[in-house]
Length: 49
Image 1 (cartoon, rainbow, N blue to C red):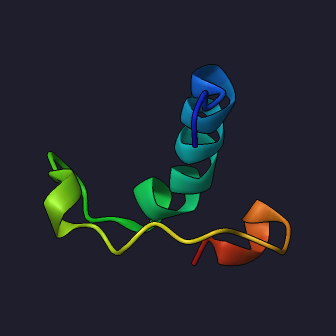
Image 2: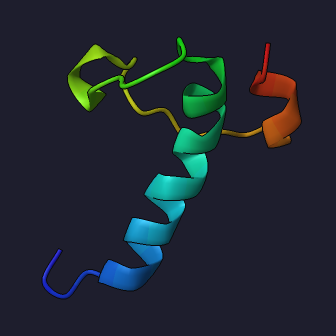
């Protein structure tokens, strides 16, 4: 990408991480212990356990 839309990409990354954060263990969890970031195609509430 020559000129990526940084704001939009950052926002999409944060929003796609919400289910991962909600499903993670309590306390401090570094990102290297989280699953790989995936593009979500269903509503986000369907990814929360």
